[in-house]
Image 1 (cartoon, rainbow, N blue to C red):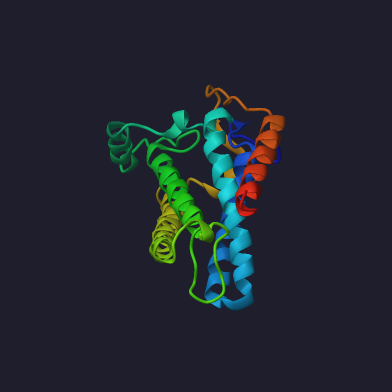
Image 2 (cartoon, rainbow, N blue to C red):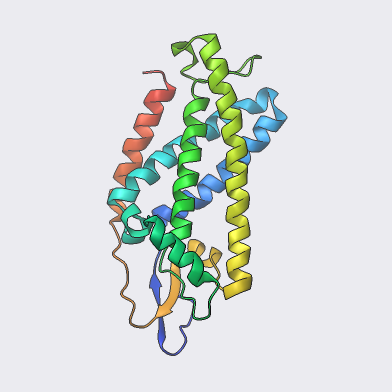
Length: 226
């Protein structure tokens, strides 16, 4: 660990490597999907490939949310509306304390992003652009149905842009208001916490690798129209 903890604190592992790879890979692939769609033409092949990769990553993240490390699990950060409101009120008061992993508001932000990404990638499988590009499952539906799904696909992208923008704004606000750096822990996996905070349980890397291979096989089967 290259960061020295202050007196009364310690540095612990908060984010495992599967979560960090997922986070930065989705960010990069989302940008590729966006730019390739704007360029069009031959670049649409990259749009399709990046979409397949995002679909696999989202499927992996959903499963990892049930069998992964403690801070990655939905049960760790999805809270009832009352807890979310209480956290929102506490955010503006003195004595605010940072969450170990995702805070109650951030947890629902993660859920919203995953849902929007799932809608975006799944509709892309059936979409068409009325020119030369079709999703791998386009042949399973009528042209009219594909056109309707394509409109949802385009609308979901605008929703994603809004969620991403809110995510970036939140990162800035936490830094300005509370001096909390949300980016560094997602890069290093480590976070400085009070010395009496227990380190969250970490899942096996082998479990993540096996799960990733299974997900890759499922996505390949879908793309190959099996």
